[in-house]
Amino acid sequence: MKSGEFLAKNILPEEAFIPEAFNEEQLMIADTIKAFIDTEVYPNLDKLDKGDRSLMAGTLKKAGELGLMGIALPEELGGFGQDFVTQMLAAEMVGAGYSFSVSFMCHTGIGTMPIMYYGNQDQRERYVTRLATGELLGAYCLTEPGAGSDANSGKTNAKLSEDGKHYILNGQKMWITNGGFCDTQVVFAKIDNDRILSAFIVETAWPGVVIGPDEVKMGIKGSSTTQIYYNDVKVPVENLIGKRGDGFRIALSILHMGRMKLGANVIGAAKTTITQAVQYANERKQFGTQIANFGAIKYKLAEMVIRAFAHESAIYRVSKDVDVLLDEYKQTMEDYGKAAIEAISHYAVEDAILKVYGSEMLDYVVDEGVQIHGGMGYSAEMRVERGYRDSRINRIFEGTNEINRLLVVESSIKYAKKGQYDLFGEGEKVYAGLDALKPVEQGEMFETMFAAVQNFKKAIQLLMHCFTTAVKGYSAEQEIQNNLADMIMELYITESMALRVARLAGLKTAEMFEVYKAMLVVKVWDAAAVIRKKGTDAIASFADGEEATKLIRAVETLTRLPLVNVRDARRKIADTLISENKYCF
Image: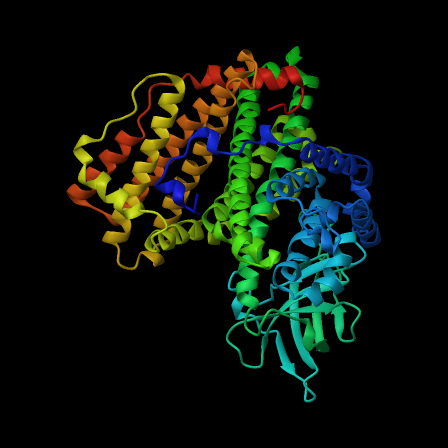
């Protein structure tokens, strides 16, 4: 499917990839990464959190020696040439590594891939081959004191030397992950008085590159985060990545990749936290029994599982879509790097959804993890405290969630207007048939769930059509766009979960399958409430009178569901988790 096409088109369960379909090689890679985290990272968490730059750099280099840094890179450059699904599974497993995850993902992602995807063959051979093994450690330098979300407003400048052999680089970057020990930097700067950024490969050892002290941060304390200053740094002209003025496009494309992989990272962190929470709940006694036996705790455990499972379903669904599109692009594009980044960047709607939903899912999970631990959760003795602090950055990383919510809606509208799918035509049909809309009726479970998802689509199609028709300057209406973004996110996540659970029939025991069905029923019930509330808020903000009444009535009809006993459903999920004493879904 094209990016955002889920808004106007349905697919069958067998067309969606699910994590239960991982092959043996993918599972072996996952096991290798888990073993590395267990043996090399967890024993050193406290030392890493004290800001030991040499320890973090050494741990990264060990990962490189094992080949873990080359999973996404082609074999001819020293990598393993794995597909995107496998890359995302690797990102999930690394996500359980707290601060190490941040340093590792920075190196393998934004520190390496701009050169891999946009560099020429000489640049790839000089740098990517050594980044693949950990011989070099990379960083990505975009943000400046006056240029955060508005990255293109940066002031760092490059001027061609009189002999034409170097660009003379001057400026300042901040919030640079791996800044304290990186060997190479992808630096964005404007050449002369250009309006648009260009991108350069800079080596830290060059004269004029000055690394600031590590920032003292709320979380991810083990990752080195610094400012970097450039004072008349001579950058060889052959280290310009792509063409002059390509930098802004490179930065945006790499952020698409970063968002997607962050969405996978948070799954590993969430599963780890859920396991910690249930194990503590099974040990801690109050009022003469384990706290896991209390309904309030079961609610928390079940909700943590549902949100993590739903997000995981969406992550691997779109990851396979990327692989399918990449295979198509490779038929027409000679350069693998460009084909790969074009495939990833194509899914701008899903990238933004998964970044926002995933980071907020993890924030919910770690918050409830601390709460289940009670006072102990606030103690640095427990890893759940570290997970809570480390999670918070994810809503800021890779473009703030505020920016990404806007991207969900803006990209959906842009792609629809380009004719990639008929979003507005479908919305017009719903509007023309308002009087004929019907709520979901009780039926066979999957029939009811997919009918609900279809009605959610109709509600979004209706409001996207009415909003863009009624509001001329709709791009400035950020509050309404946020409402619509939340509706779209709930739809994509819920549909992905429904497709996955439908495919699990026959793959799981009858008893376990009932647990998955319980998870889906609760998710659909909750999604209906979110879509109804956000839809009503949006309508009240751009319509009034009889028009508003008609639209609100339509949204209420399309989100009305047969009653669900959510208490019993959540208890079924929680009891399974409690029995297994670990995340087991």
